[in-house]
Structure formats: C-alpha cells, structure tokens
Image 1 (cartoon, rainbow, N blue to C red):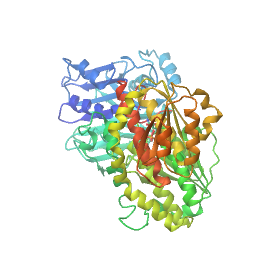
Image 2 (image 1 turned 45 degrees about the vertical axis):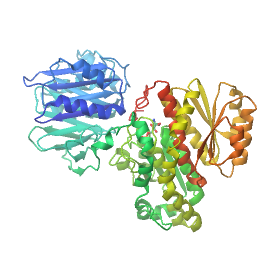
Image 3 (image 1 turned 120 degrees about the horizontal axis):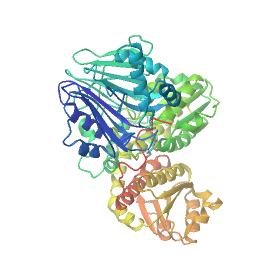
Image 4 (image 1 turned 135 degrees about the vertical axis):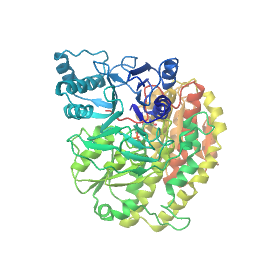
Length: 614
Ligand code: M6R
C-alpha cells in the first residue's frame, strides 16, 4: 500500500508528481503530499488528508516551483489518515523530506532512542522516525545523505520503499527498498522513481527494478548508481517496459472496474495466446516444460494467495487434482506464513497474485523456498516482487488492473490455472487426451462466450436496482462454483459495503439457512453440472422460507426458471471453465449495485489495490 513517486530533471516536478500520484492512487487514497526543492533551495512540503484531487486543490496558489521532488499517496498503517500523518515527513531541521511505503516494525525502539537525544515528533507515523534518524546520523557522523540513509536502513527492521531529498544536496534523490517495490525510470536527462511503472511509462520505457537492500543514488546529470546497504556496488539491469498509456486510462467507461470487466474477451485471448493453438489439444507452458522434473516428482502442491487470488486458488485445487491427480492444499498466505508449515523439497508451492507485491504472499514464498520447495508464480504484473522471488511461473497477461476490485485478473488467474492443470496432467499422463481436448476447446471459445455473457449487462443493471435495499446477501454454489460464490460475495461487499457471505450450497442447511427471510436475497450459482439436481433442492429450501432467489443458470434451464425469482442465463460451457463465465454476471451485479448505492467502486473505502503491509 501507499504509492511513491520521485522526479529529477529539467521539467517542473509538480505536474509529473501529481500525475504519477493519480496513477498510483489505487495503492492508497486516504491522504497525499508532495515535497519539492525550488530554485532558491527551499523545501516546500504540501500534504493533506484525502485524495490526490484534494492535494491539487490544496496546492493551488502555493509555490510549486522546482525540478526535483517526491510525492506520496497513503494507505494508513501507523496513525489515522490526517494532515499531520500524511507524507512527506520532514527532519528536525526541515531540510530532509522522505516518503515511505511499508512498515518500520522497530520504530518504537528507534523513536525512544531519538527522544533521548532530544528529538520530538509531530505525527504518529513510523516514517517520521526514519527521516529523523537519517538526519541524526547525518549530523552526528558528519556524512553525506546517502551514507546517512545507508546507516539508518541498517538499523531498521521491516519493509520499506523510500525516496529522500535534502536541501543540502538538492540535485539528488536517494531511493531504497526492502520488501516494497521501487522502479526507477531512466529518461533523457531526467530520472523517475515510483512504486510501479505506471507513473513512468509516458516519459520513458527504460526502467530498473530495485532489489531488496539496494539504494539508488539518482543525481542530476549523472548516470544512476546503485549500492547495497553493505556498501557494495550493485548491477544495473535496464529493462524495457511493455506497457502503454492507453492501458492506464478509462477508455470511455465511467469506471476502471467496468472497463476491466468489458476487457475480458481480449484479456483471456491474451492470456491463452501462445499457450494453446488454434487447433489441437497441446498446452504449452514454458514454466512446466523447463521444470518437468519438478512437476513429475511433486508429491503435493500448496497454493498460497490472498483475497480474490485465494478464490482462484480454490478453483485451481479442483482443476489440478482432477487433471494431475496430485493432492493440492490451498492456504491463505497470511495464515501459512505463521503456521510453521510443513513444506518439503518434494512440494511445489504455487503463489498467485495479481499485483505480485502482496506482503503475505511474498513472505509465504520466502518460507517455502527456505524449506526447499519449488515455487511457481501466477502473477499479472511483470517484474513484480513475487514474479522475481519465484523459481518459475506463468504470467496471466491481462494488462494493468486498476479498479481495486479484481475482475479480469481473477478470470486470467483461473484461465492460467486451467492451462497449468492440463499441462501437468499431460506431463504426468493422468488425464485422457479427449478430456484435454474438450477443455482446450472451451478455453479457445472463452473470449466469444465472455462477449456473449457481457450482453447481460443491461439486464443485470436493471436487476441491481431491485436489490439496493438489501443489507445482507448470500451467495451459494457447489463444486467448481463454491469458490465462485465466495468471489461473488467478496466483489459485492468490497465495493457496495453490503454484507455478503459465500457458502457451499449444501452447507446452507447447517447454519446459514437460519438467516433466510424476505429481506435476504440469495444468489445461486447453478449452471448445468453434475450437481445440478442437488442445487435445485437447495434453491427450493430457500424459496420455501420466503427468500428471494437470483439464479445464474445455463441458458434454457426451465426448471430453475420456474422456481427462482430472477434468472441470469449464461452460455453452456464445460464444468471446468464455468467459474470463468459465471464470474462475469457476478462482477456486473456487484458493480451496478455499488454504483446505484453511490459508492466509489474504483476506490472503495479502507481498501488498497496492492497490500504490501501485514
Ligand atoms: O495482488 P494480489 O492478487 O496478491 O491481491 C490479493 C488481494 O488483496 C486482492 O485479491 C483483494 O482481495 C481484491 N481487492 C479483491 O477484489
């Protein structure tokens, strides 16, 4: 969480920083701030509670001059969102400013030590402690800014990506990272720094991803220099971005979320491209081919992920167990990391993450690797921390996902997991070729089927108007679509603030059935599958108790049409790919209910897109 941006060059920094903050707002949006050194060498710091728009209003008629600066958009960890806790934070003398993404775990001890030296603190943040520590070291050791940053970081326990400027060294920005991302953009006579590449792409496509424990020394007119916290010089690996500015814009849609829902025919096409052919049943995943020995020898697979990615993992479990006959466990990364997990070198750990930056998933990977497991990543963001921390993996290639509620990343993850299951199954000869062929054919048809399913938009928009009254929703599904129920419920609650619970439909009678009354709508995910008859009984149980039923069914399902209050008809698909198709109406339902309730769907309260703290 939190987004940071930095700029040094010949252009006015303010516009670049603000534009960059807007791009990073998905990472946190409870307060924002900028710090710039102007031509006279003064440090101007402006910060405020609220979104980047509020910061812009705040900066009107202020001195925003300067060609070097840093900026921040915050998701509060230490201290409530307010003007004082907003970043940048400044040192005692007011000469050094710092922005930070991450958490300094030992900030309490460091703060006490600094207080003993006479330091006082205005904010409740861990970040203020760091900037004051840097200045204390700089003054005490009479050293350069970079040396002071390096020494200070040696004292710090926790996660950080930071950017620091100092009026005593106004032509320099220092950046550093440990467990939180930082990308440096190399332009023509100008250098950028940001939490991800989105603020950089319109100025340059040449980037360097900083590694953990590295410090970047960015000096005006000089080539980038990177050292480690042990003061050794580090290799500079300049990469070329494959990202375009249009991918970061709404493209005529009112929200990123809706744009991303409607992008899915294309994103799924991109996801399967080169992995399945136009004909035949071959599934080519280079990660599986290159590590065939690992997949052949695997005794068990453990999937680690959070949130929506965890739901994709639950679907992945069924797909892999079915196709590859390897037992699969699915763990919340946040639980796994603190459970002293039993992991052996015969295990494969699959880490799923859209952002590739989720702190819990990253920590789970580190544990798994330490215990000798082969770690396979399923990520969206190319070059992200998780993509780089894994032994191998498959990108989902769905392009930047900006709406906080994950949509196209979920369908991309499930698509990759389907291909992964097939590829492992083919390798281990545990799946019949005709079954592979059937699923591959379904994957090939997915973009067209999603296109058809998106035509439900108007109907779902109308339906959503009926249910804005609800304070609670139940989502029920079975088999492959139990995780779809969890995901449908998560989508609704995170953007509309309506409480929603996902449950296996047959478990309803063991508790949640007590909740059913006229006030509680239930969404049944009930496409034609092996358990169709069973789910019809579950629907009848709800109807018998006066509950309203919205059922997502396969087109032509007259039985459920007669019982349910509302039906949403999706095209016929094989069971294994049905979670991808059913997720489309569930995303649309959540979206339209939230919009009708006047919620900010792209930036729901308290949430951030990329959860880089514990
Ligand atoms: O980037 P990741 O996939 O690792 O993120 C995991 C969760 O934080 C994420 O899926 C979250 O639950 C979304 N807001 C769901 O829409």
